[in-house]
Length: 598
Image (cartoon, rainbow, N blue to C red):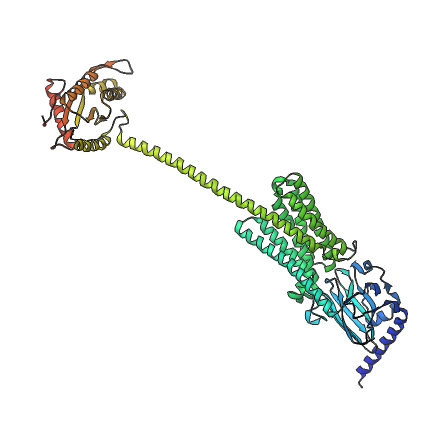
């Protein structure tokens, strides 16, 4: 036998003697685990000892008298403490058949847990904990789980060494493998549902942010991301599935996630409650607190992990309290959706407060305090999601209304534009077809109306008459009294011609002092003679100028009638112009009537 073998045998004998000596004193701490029951709590048959200095099992076995009996479950809740905590109990198998039990620590956020199983001739050593890689754990599970096999009628002594930078909650029990895995399936179902809900809500609101460009959805998704990161690590699932390689730094991820979530929660509250509009003071308060959260977030990266976790608890509890009070104030001010925010945040605050107070050893450890923040956050996020859904529908209605208003405005602008175009078109048409001084048709307007009148004349077989009038003695008036007086005379002449013209006749100013009358439906030449006589009589009356002077103008008239050989305006104008100059030169009558058709 080599020297190492002798030393191991001597050490095992020494531990066995110490175990026998301790068993005589601690027989009352023995749990008889019958296979008839699938679960036993070890809390009431456990003694504990907390030490600030690292000790080996040999050192601990020499000081068994320092262990204290557990009188209630709160004795196993140590909060934030330095050093290691040792637990010891005895486990007996009353059955003659071997039995396998699983020693289960309920609290998953324990860095290192070492289980020593002292038997008659040797000692089993198993390790687990959130800071250990999966390959080094007794069982690859999110909790610290240790299989212990007892032979028939065997009694073993269990020593558990626990070290954790976070809060220590050391409730533990023994379970049959069947009971443990059945319970594990139930826990995994609810955890999967919980984290699936957080993931779905976060992604859904993240997509809404890209669709609607509303920052409130981005802040909510980032808040859910930070919170999910921390809870995944705290529950051990994140370490089990994703980041077991972090080792001792695993606990720091909890502080980072919760602190980041606190900062994003303030941004979400400011955006959701529109504090910049409804409560500027609270808006400034939350902005200052968010800067504190950013400072805490930077701090938790560099300081030791345990102070980082304590800062996390303080920041998270303060954030929840501030947001609740802000929500109550906004609810009192009747801010939209503030009441639902208060209800949701009150539930979350309750869960966060229970979580923080349990970590600080103020509240006892039980199912509610252990899972309070998860229960509260699940309800809170569902309620906030309903509120965000209502906000989404409101934004959708506002967008639809804005689109409808835009369409209505565009239609209104289109109608205004069409009216302006019509007005402008009318003005341009008037400018193009009418003389600006007299209001009569100009040359272009005369051509348009003459073409239509000639077409009607050809259709109905009735001649079209054109009367050309040229003013006599107009230039001396212009030279003596000025162009304004001349313009006034032209306007008066135009009014008198319009007064003489029948309904349906067309008057035009053809040149400087030349005027044209276009007449339809001339059944007999006598009608044309009457109209020419009335024109001569009307223009022979004196015209009183604005200066008071009385002036007279004469008139030379040329007339033409349409027939097969002159069925164009140009021909009618040419014939009427020739007749007018004949009349102007001879002065043998007030007018001359010319028609090749008579």
